[in-house]
Structure formats: structure tokens, C-alpha cells
Length: 403
Image (cartoon, rainbow, N blue to C red; front, top):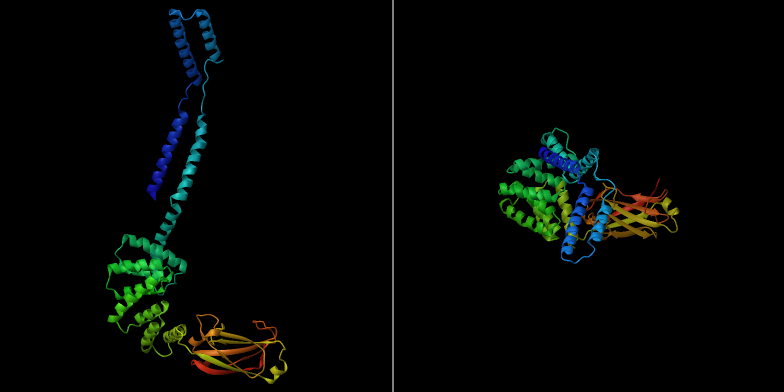
């Protein structure tokens, strides 16, 4: 940083000296130069007349000489000399100021001074951010602070390029920051320094599994299968392999690895439920799912007396936790009791299928004007949350009014 300023000041100094020399140089007397040229021309022409007269070519020498003298006098200025000057010394001040201003503006635009200042601040904050990150009792770093810490970590690795732990930390930061390129490059560098580290291989494989590039997914598959030979019951390897095959739409392989993983997971655990949902989703995507929900709907006596003539019946199914439906069906109002079937074709979004749920809650509502949004005094019914086994029947009684 200091060297850059020294170079800049040196260049400005040279520019100012050059301008000073140019402005301080005594200008040439252009009128005097013209007189010298006219005199030279007069002498040369007079010599030619003398030579012509000697050879007898001219007969009116006196008249020619007189005319030449008149021509010379006509070219002489009224003043003996006239000096053209470029300016006075005070003109140097604004010119030098302009040169300095333009130079500073160009440096600020292209010299990276702001980046240098930001990097300097990052390097100052890095030790404190690292201490907070390593201390489990300290306040967690925000996403912005993690981004700043990753910049400081990269700067630190330039001075210590063989630090395996810091390269691994940078890779994991890349995963947290959703920067797959940073994570991949950091883990590759770490693995070059520690090629047999199983933890680094697993982390690198996870980055490749998350990648949208199919080539990265295939590379992850080869790496994970090679590791699984030596660690056949490793839950992380099995999970990553199943996720990798699922991303490649090889659902039967994904199901196989998930089912191999299930015996290692505690019943009722969040991880086991996630794996079971993954299996159901893979079966659905592969066309192997036959889950169906039969809904039986009836009306209370009060609701029967107040049915609208042109009403619409909405059936929505949730998982009993989130209010966002996993399946919805809309049909014109008709006779009751009514029985209908819902399956994955009624899903709201492909990522949340009916077949992937383990518990369900059904809501049936009669809309007077066909609006999907509940209106005041709409009649509805809601059953209690029930476990879903994949194919079963649930009943709902419409007996309440929307407040």
C-alpha cells in the first residue's frame, strides 16, 4: 500500500516539473524569426539580380533593386519585435491541481484502493472473528461475518498454504455460505495435503453430491462407493450415496441404500423419519407408489338446512403440523354422504407428496361463491390428526361455521 502511494507521488512530481519547465521556457520571438527570414530572402534575391546583371540578362537593375527594397519594408512589423508568450507563472497552479485531481481519480477507479482498505479491515477483524467461531459459548457469527471471516481465512492461507485444518475449515465455510466452488476448491487443496483423511473425503463427496453438475454427482458416487468398501455401515456414506442416486434419478438404487441405512437409525428419530420420507418419495417418482386416501364426508343436520345452491366443496389434506396442504381437491357441491379418493396426483407441490406423509388431517369446506379463501359463515369440518399407513379411509363431518 505504501509503495503504491510512493509511486503515485513520484509520477505526480515528474508531471509537475515537466509542466513547470514547459511554462517557464522563454518563448521564441516569432517576429524576429520572420525578419531574419525576410532579410535572408532579400540578400539572396539581390545576389541573383547582381549575377543576372553581370550576364547582361537584366536591363533595369535599378528598378528591380528598388522594388525588392519596397517589398522588404512592407514585410517589416510596426514594432521592432513582438513576443508571443504562453502565459504567466500563476497559470501553473490550476494546471497542477487538475493533474493531481485526474491522477487521484484514475487511481481510485483502477488502483483498487477501496479493495485494499476493505482487505486491511478484514485482516484486522479476522483474529477476533476466528476466536468467536472457535468458542462454542460465544455469540454465533452472522452470515455477513462468516463471509468476512472466509476472506480473512483465505488471506491467512496465502501465508500458510500447507495448513490442512484451515483448508478444511474454508471448505466447510463454503458449504455454509452455499458457495460450492469455494468449498470444492478448498477440499481439493486439503486432500492434496492429506489424501487419506476419511473425513475430508466425506466432506468433499457431500459438496459433489450437492452440485447441480451430473459429472460431479458421478464423481461423488465413485468416491463414496470406494469408501463404503472399507466402512460398510457408515451412516453418512449411506446417506450421501442414497441422496446422490436420487439426484441422478436412479430411484431403485437410492431406495436400496436408504433401506440399508434404516436398521442403524433409532425408531422415531428425525433422521429415520427423513429417510422413510425419502424412500416414499423415491417410490412415487419411480411409479412404484400406490398410496391412496379415501375421504368420507357427511353433513350435520344444521349444515344440511343451509346448503348454498351453487356451492363448491374443497377438500384439503395437511400433515397435521404445517397449514400448507399436501393435497387438495375441488368439486361441485352434490349429494351427501360423499366418498372420494385422493392420491399423489392431487399434490400441491411435487416436493410434498401425499404418499410421503406419515400422518394426515383432512379439512372439508363448503364455499358459497367458489372462493378458495375461507369466507365468514362457510361450513366446514375437520378430523383429528391420524396416522397414515399408505392406503386407508378417513371420515369428516361438516358441522362448523367459519367465524
